Length: 466
Image (cartoon, rainbow, N blue to C red):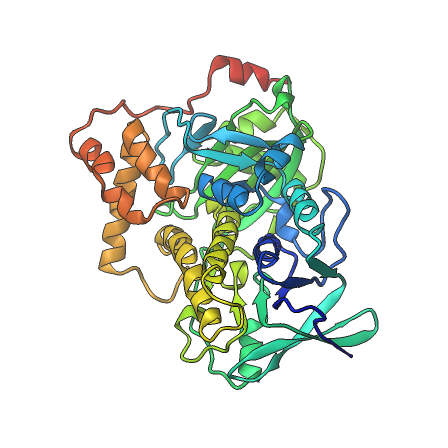
């Protein structure tokens, strides 16, 4: 069965109602009639969904993503906060130890605020805002089988769902189907050459358990607690306590090859106590668990360089995790999703979806936020044993040492911390680390002494007592 557009407006298809897919649909609705094709049945409200197993782990949205969220869907962040989310000051509302085992002073930055909530809540509010748009149609429980068209132009998709097969035509097809994307296979089926890929896999395993926030911390004023793994001392082990809506703590622990956490509930607290600093274990050992332990191992950094393809068809582009997936410990996936949709909008405000070259321009524009997050993740993970077949180059080693020094400076100087957070938040390019705001404190100070332990106040520790 073939379904064709019935209006004079351009038409677009988005594969996947992921965060990337929903943001892309919201952008495309400005220019076209949009059909979102989703394999799952989407839940009503903030409930888990089958196709997003990673949702159970800790998530946050860096300030570069917060700005993009509201730019794409005005008022979205406020809606998430009204539903129970929280905007936190980084590093003011965080107790954080860097990979080089340095604790950050809790300087208050009014500029850098990260969005914190459960992934289920974020997805639910975003669905409610986007899928009610009168120019967006949703096909649920529908699996895309192939692209329609040829090597020169993609004209739509072929899909199956509810005991029928259907073909949908469109001026532009966006693949936002995530890490499991079949785009490279679909393109080969059209007669196009393969696309260069790179994987850097530190072998990180994640284990997450929900706790009832102990004592008086259920008001969510409790800081985030973050102990990052150290690539220089493998296996790298780390963890985070993320206070979220409903008076809960999402506690996610992580370890690389030879130091992975398990799904054993009895071993969860002991693993947390074994981190480079035991603060997470000490905080949860008296807390009440309210879930089992959920684990994930699909955490490698994987990038497909579609923007460098020898030939690229008109009418097709790939966004989000379908282009690049990152080690979740860096928390950049959601921010890149939103910034990629901003890049999509920028191209479409200058060109019709069906114009020659539009699809490739979209692909190249989306590669910029992808590259920024990729370089940050790979710059750390490439140093873990077995992470990649290609050892770090001399330049990469130099940059890693420079970043370690930048972190050490930012941990003790608010001016340098601002520069560091501009880069980590994906608001400015890595060249910001070579600005006077970083270099002057790095070379001349002044800066505070290194902290000898986690910068928690006595009131915060007392509030976490059961």
